[in-house]
Amino acid sequence: MSDSSKIELSAIFSSCQKGKGVISMAVSVRYKWNVSEQERLNRLFIALADEQRRRILELIREEELQPAEILDKLGDDCRSLSYHLRILRDAQLVTVRSDGRAHLYRLNKAEYQRLLERIEGLP
Image (cartoon, rainbow, N blue to C red):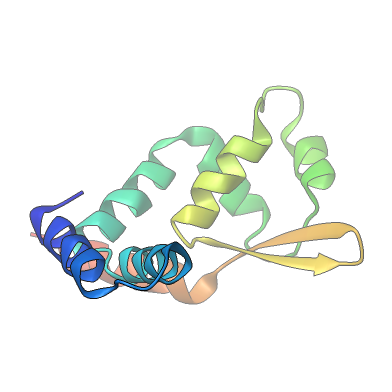
């Protein structure tokens, strides 16, 4: 956690005197939305660093797929699919839509496009 996040968190704690629910809610909301641009880029590059995750993105680029369908297309060489999908979700490269009991994964094209623009802008 950066120094600025620690300062913000301590300011929230000192300003909220009325109960744990208010404090924990304020802290989680505050921390969630104060992710630096550098940290977002780090998450994106971590997500793209793994070959399995890049293959998953390629599969879901044009169509929504359930995890079982992703596994079928990747074959047996993709272990821990849920771990890879979580990293892609954390990086906001994947969107998830529920259809009844099924979860459908698709490439977040807007975030992917922003990523490509950021990469082009790197020195």
